[in-house]
Length: 342
Image 1 (cartoon, rainbow, N blue to C red):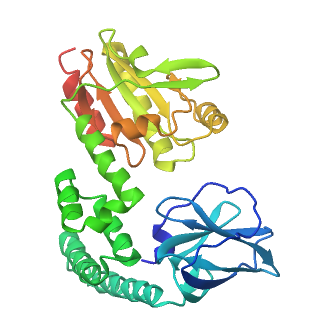
Image 2: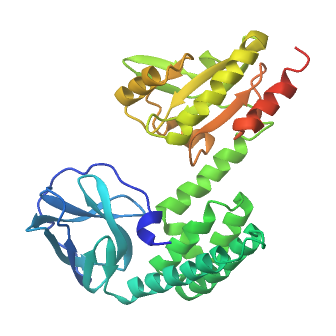
């Protein structure tokens, strides 16, 4: 369970010369071996804020960063807009080889954490077939390790990383309680956004009225309210062209629309986190027949507290959300019950 696999990618960064005018602080040197790239520049990006912290030219397959940082920080190494390793930037010398970072006491702690989690994976995967996999026991074993390392690192980037691994599964009350107990966590942008996202999700859960939004695309304004009502149910599919699970779910949506469209169901796609031209290509390639709101980016997902896609929401003719996050057979069962008397 290496850090480099758990952290997401970032957008393509603009080329820039090596940073100058560094603030006084902890001095670092990072040497990153990047033998397979033809890129000219590499970047260190703050994982929490996505801000560019440093840049360096790639010379003979090596990018060397020199600078200072006020305090240790979790970062990503980015080359050609893609991740090339994740580590904790701190004082001293750090080397990055094959996406793995060595150097600094906090990176060593991350390696120890990974090794302990790998031991849990190994212990459960090596159980004989006669013993059923106990997911609850597996998650409890993971949590025991996370709790141990978090207790010792709550005030540094290791604790931040560990908290993120569990925070997405927390309820809003659990998240608020954890932040209250560890106030330093509240300073992180991602955690604050996660907190506001859970509030938004609670406000748009089943039984709540839908929230309207508008998107401008090609000088035209598109609103969710343009599609709600008219005596029909509306299935809203929040998706992106690059999202494999989203594309797989369109088969289910097509089946649902074919069966229940004549009984009073409409479908609307809302493209999020996607370039409009890619959305249009995806619509054509996968033959999506329903109307689309294109170029929503973060507008709809922030409003509805959607952390991942696909996300499906069903709105009844009165504008109330009657289903959320139902997919596959669960969605089909809901539709069968909803339209059983129609």
